[in-house]
Image (cartoon, rainbow, N blue to C red; front, side):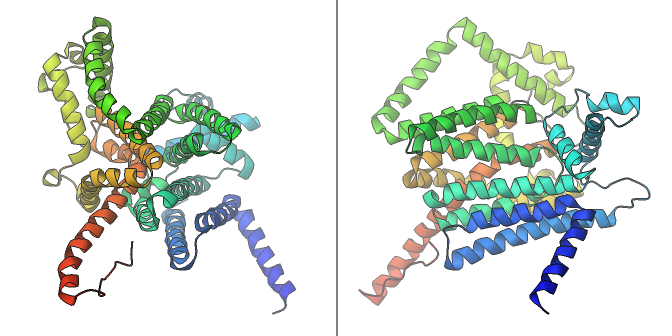
Length: 460
């Protein structure tokens, strides 16, 4: 077939696809650019592995969205959805689009479009997409996929030069194919956009330290502030979560790079904390923060579904009971929150088919947590700044979710705020543990073979 005919057929096919679903065409273009950026600077087997992993991840997600379209009975409902909140998000964003275009709409829809419940700037992002491409309930899912895959590639490109190719690829595979992460990445919810913005601020936090020119450092610093403000509009708490993560990362990197400062901080910090907590004003403020977290936990426990308890039983009789939180109860609440974040849901407490299906991933989560200490040490040896950023972002997200959670399903979802940063550290830990085990296994073999027969692992 002549070249011009091939071009014509391809052009007509693209035109038909664009007519049926404009966002699907833009999605393909965006994923091609992301894939190109992911393999930039790589070659050989590594390039092929990265390409294969990303292509499978993208195709699987696109197939999930296409499958949702095919199994939905559009004679009964206008569009299908994976999760209940998605329908509400998509409908509200379409109502906002109608308001922007001056379309006539029901008064109730107008009220709900600007309702305070679940208010987030992501609704306006979806509304803007609907304005550009027309109502796109399934395109909203593709937008989520694009944001999530792009965020994973941002993190991959950030850690690969510092932590090594194997650890970076292992973290990428976990991030793309863990079932819960896969599920949220194909959703029309705010989680993928929040991940993309968080990954961007992590990259900017490194640039503030590493950029060669002061102008570039200043621009990265301003970028963190702007992104933090945007994150607050996407999800409440995004601003303090981001700023806290960045400050902890910089402080940790500074102390680890200066052993004397680290030792001095380890000695002085408990003294300063003790003196601060001895002041009534500080005690009241700290107590108020724990109370606020306990109230959020109480609210999660009161929601439908499977829940777990962190407070003493007497405090669940009424929400006002949290106001009578005592010192011992406060300490137990904090300890239970941190432990429950790691262990819930316990395999022995599986009470539903969904929980049973989640059990294999829960075992993977336990492995990630077990490898995390080894990974932190190994990552600090490789690159102090990158390791500090990953640790700080994961720590802030984990503590925030741990102190406010109470619903098991919500915990699993919100654990995804820390997981995109912890997986890289755990992958480093896995590599170091395997290298240590290989070394222990190789020594007696090499001793038996004599000099000149040393065997080296080819996967590190």
